[in-house]
Image (tube, rainbow, N blue to C red; front, side, top):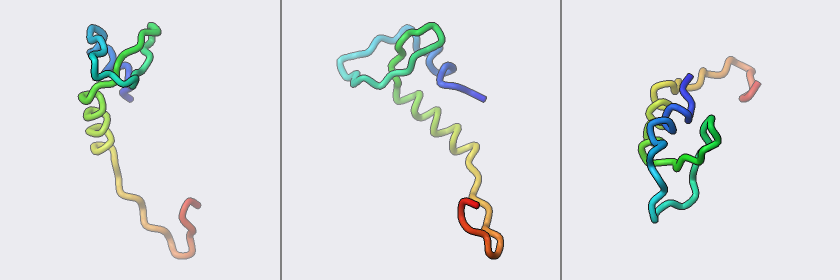
Length: 65
């Protein structure tokens, strides 16, 4: 399973610019790594690949059961 660490390791050299609004993750070494658009896009792509439609309910089955 991939973690935020994977994306953070590629961005360690980037420093927050003047548009930085405080969104960051903490890597394994305790460094604050700004969350970038590329990191968010990568996360959405992984979700899209792993998403599966919900299974239909069996007769008499309640949602969440």
